[in-house]
Amino acid sequence: MSIRLGNSCGNCENLVESNVCKVHGVKVGSSYTCDSFEMKVALKDKENCVSCARYETSDCANPQKAAPGMSCAHWAPLSASA
Image (cartoon, rainbow, N blue to C red; front, top):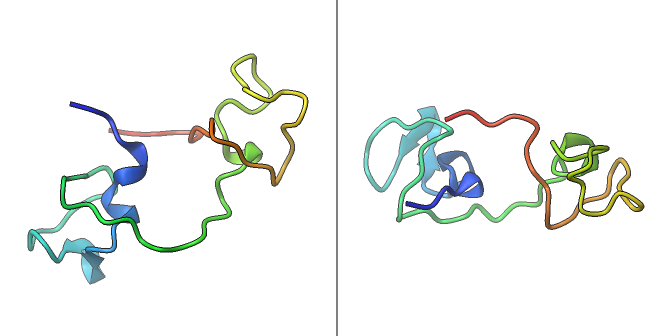
């Protein structure tokens, strides 16, 4: 089983009011995911160096370029819960 942080119900276009999945007809939480996941079409500006767990650490992929407002393919959330 793969872990897919970005594919949570919070990012799915099938999520409707009151956190109900319109495909499965059940109430879901932000940590749920499924194979019927459809990514919402939206720009997100929260994902940048300041909100990355790797910012200013030895794990940062681009330590010379990392700065507030910058983003990269190695972004990791500051906290994740299961």
